[in-house]
Length: 375
Image (cartoon, rainbow, N blue to C red):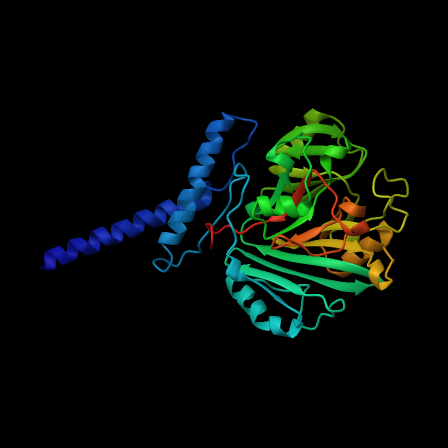
């Protein structure tokens, strides 16, 4: 009857309206982790996880019903990220064949101005490894620059929570150490880099899960915020734990990296101090860095030798900074180099570390899909 039809329409519209309001609430309230210094941490963790699941489920349910962009995000309390869809990985030795991939990445993630392009000159017979779903794009490749083999992993993500840090054994302060490949496989990383080897040194301002763990401000510190931005604290600027925690709380810092120095800030090279505590900055040395290229757009970099092919050149820290600036980095920060410098994509070691094998280390940074397991 007409009345039945009318009631169906009303209730149907009401259901859609309720879902829309729920999603709107989720987008404005959910996914913004609470201040971990306040309230009950366990309750916050449970509620954050519930909010994450509700947001992801509502986003999927309304796909095609309302013209509202889907939002997926991850919870920092969950050590293991969703498993990427193995069918979304691929390799090629032909950069020109990546044109359709780049077009799809632009469609799904709005990716513009990638460093990688179809005319890139690959290092010898090396492969491009790539991955794409609606929450993450990864392209990993090698180039020869100034006689050094640069391994580059370019990433665009849909949500800041997909930029993650993992500590060996999943516990701050653990004495366990593993290779970057082992840790990347454990947490389902799409792509990963060795970190700052935090357990090996006491330097810097160490922040884990929004809490300042220690302060020894003799090196530059890179803070990663809930918006996915890099904030830098130069050596000597913050010298006590109370001031550091206030900075962390005011800027919604999730975690920090403590190695350095800062290499690029606001697209400009930062002068490298000759007496910097870490990294043998004046020497020619294998290097690693994390760069912010734009909004939720990153680049992990390792600069290594290839002695099997007679390539032994590696840069000073200042020369390394100039290369990163030339890539178009908005911000760049040095990570632990030498044998520690490793990049892994799809659980595979991509670069050649010093001495030809990975070092056991204490931590990685990585990027994950936000889609449910299998995508």
